[in-house]
Amino acid sequence: MSSLFENTRLAALDLPNRLVMAPMTRNRAAADGTPGELMATYYAQRASAGLIIAEGTTPNAVGQAYPDIPALYDASHVAGWRLVTDAVREAGGRMFLQLEHGGRIGHPDISGITPLAPSAVVLPGTVHTKDGSRPAVVPREMTLDDIATTVADFAESARKAVEAGFAGVEIHGANGYLLHQFLGRGTNRRTDAYGGPVGNRIRFLLEVVEAVADAIGPDRVGVRISPGIDVNGMAEGDTDAIYRELVPALARHGIAYLHVVFADPDDPRFQEIRKAWPGTLVANPALGWGGPLPEDGGKAAGERLLAAGAELISLGRSFLANPDLVERLRTGAPLNEVRDTMFYGGGSEGYTDYPVLSAQPTDRVLEPLAA
Image 1: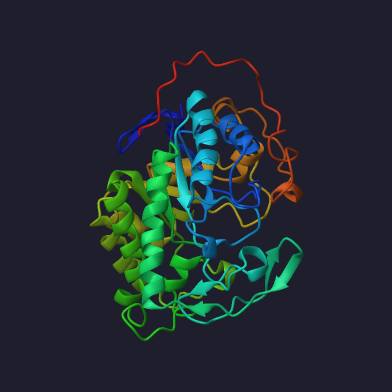
Image 2: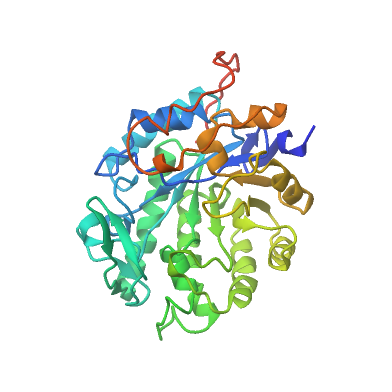
């Protein structure tokens, strides 16, 4: 049997397999960011994953990157997410929540607020709003007070995540969102303690990690990174120097895991991160950005990454289209075709209506999520 299906442990969680459902923006929350029953159904359908990392969720209003993405900064958000975690727990699953601040990826037509960023450097291209694509606006450079407030917002949102029933949170430091924007020379042109040398550019992310770990415990915290990825107009400039300093600094906080996007076991950069990271490494295989999925849904790529030292393998679109992905990969059953026109927004179509191999109810004895 493939090691993908072996049970393992992540901090205080026992995982029945090494397959992780990666966080994926689906734009199905209410306009105010509150999750509802449809989202609860979607995640509960995929509870056989060893771990679910719920989609990027904004820790404050100004961090909202897109319409109808979830939020977690007031009581209604906690109650909405509790619907989701209760449903997943009842189906036998385990969940972390990804906290994502959009930074310059935002728009007044989405949040009603001018977006914040490390520097007043506009996102190239457009931003998707309720009324279609709009040219990106020049963000406001964050003051020191803005930075301190944002750190506190991440910590408070993490507390609310635990209150809402999540086992932990993943801090999104990847894919061109705010924390990643601070890392890159192309987006961070500051001359104060948060800009310039690598040690300054990684400072904000480390402060967020420290505050979140202090709020809920380091064993409930993961961080996602995307070394060298240029999505959303990112230009890190000195990628190797950034992650040679960042990864050991994150390790000193004793957090639960590091999540590497588009991981390639043959890439020297991945190999270097694996050597530098002493804890659990979650690897997201490089299956292509928006291209067709391999017929095996990423199984072979995941097995190669496990052989290269990763402990957990995260898959996105494969879980999106296959609620019972674990069983399909285990048995070699064919996979559903991904309907990419229904990724973002809408109702149940392309969201909760993907067929499963069997509708037999589980007889598993349910255990509560780690509180």
